[in-house]
Length: 112
Image (cartoon, rainbow, N blue to C red; front, side):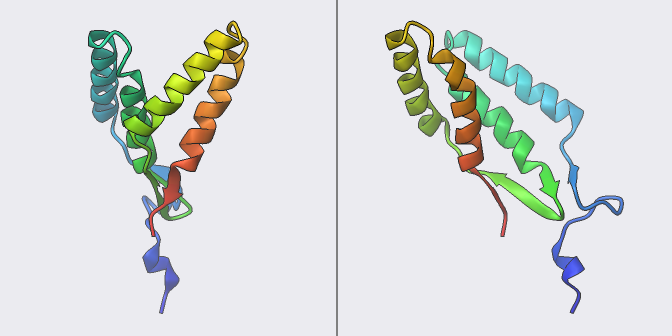
């Protein structure tokens, strides 16, 4: 029984990205339009949509990755981070990038 059949490959490689350029352009344009037309309120939705697309099209060492984060979950954090930025007179904004990356990592896993 070969374990190699369990893993995905593309052109003999076990780590790859299989998303397309036109998909990326489409998702990015949609994210920008949603963000602009909602005056930034749906920016967390745009982030989760684009990040989810990237992760769901990524295979590492033959194992496909999956993003399970939701816009609703990010929106709650977004409000909390915004309040902390206001309370600390902008100082907390330096940590928001790190917190966002941590949230992405918590919601990323391998497909079984």
